[in-house]
Length: 599
Image (cartoon, rainbow, N blue to C red; front, top):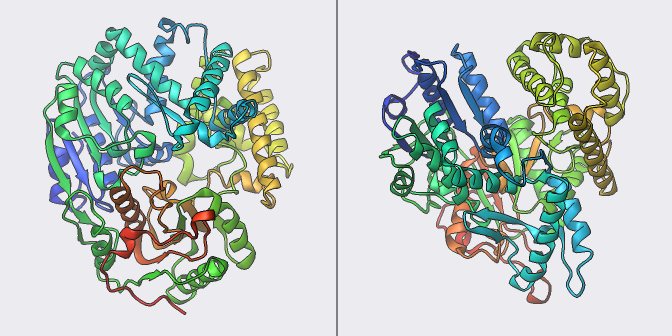
């Protein structure tokens, strides 16, 4: 049985990990949630007594899955009986691929398209609509168990959007394609129409762990609860999250209660809590706690707890002077406080604001590095075979990344096998050796990858071009990437097509992060600078729960910071005929002794 050293965990973390029954764990920001999950998975894996059993962990992002997987391996625990990934990846691997033959839309095979393919198709279909101006972002939707929900806030567009989506789904069906939403919907339909699938999975899974439960949708709860219920108590569940960070309500996410989820899956949950914050100073923890929607006790106990944090709020800077104000705050935190560039994050509610600001800041601060929108030359399409291979090619061959690259190599080999390629003579080490032996001098990123792919498969003596699946993935990968690069170049991104920019996709943080509020969730930084904190943006003016959503968004923003926090509600952003945007009211009503922003 896996054991840990004294001092690795606090009593609350130990109690959650050692609890033999199902656990519903509320974990405040910076409470060591990832460590707790990691040790819980390690404990469950080490306790397996059958080679047929599996531990399954559902994470919100692929990055989180990679981080937890690597931490477990570094603890010396065998992960051969662990499956970890997003809910979409879970549904693909455990439901659609093995049982798709039983669904009429999947029985002849399928390919998953990425968000950029979806956007392109939506744009083409929207252009055909007469009498109403529609854009791709109007066509967002998600499935519930009883049908789909449109995310477009303008109800007068719903009829037209519904027509576009029906054409879109018909096109996908004709081309045997799925988008991310259909992955969930078809998985749910298979689970419901063939209960034996849930029974089989319920007998295989020893424990199902769910991270960030507050961002989970109703249809996802339905899939997981059906499997757990079919297990007849043989599988336990470990559900972790923070309802105060439930900011995906507009996309269907919500924080289920322990009682409701227990009723759905036939389990009784032990409700537990992690309230020690190891991330932020006491001043910052006290500040973001004021935005809690659900009561929680949060106490700063980490090494930064006594840091003399600067918490400032600025509602006087005009939009025209915003860039200069951000430059000033960046310089202060780097040059005066001594914070590393990679430990600074600039946050705003909308990507449209961030893309242009990234380029402007890069010009204003030529000696600084930035990681933000407009700097990623190809989409993170985790189901595309060539994307999976690109991760290995574009990642440094170093001892620190060996475990990660070995795991990726295993996924590439599995992808070849799924496509019907004979892989008996290829193992993970030989694949990595072949990749490490290739040197390509091309500067253009897409040309570099094409040449690299050709040389690699020549070494492996594999002819993939006659394979329908790999060929289709190849064309999709390069076509989508070229469209993305063309768009970013048109918007003014510099050197986006060069191989150095491609390598940065899988590299760690090296510069100042620029991100949306939703994109920064789960991360942490020494200094956080947030702007665009305006009513109608935080929250969006169409949000049904204005006060609660505003509190949750501010809670997420502020809880990312360890040392310094700077909040800005700039003046001069026009709302057209209704005047300018005004500061977020929830923020204005917060009574706090703010510091003066550095001059």
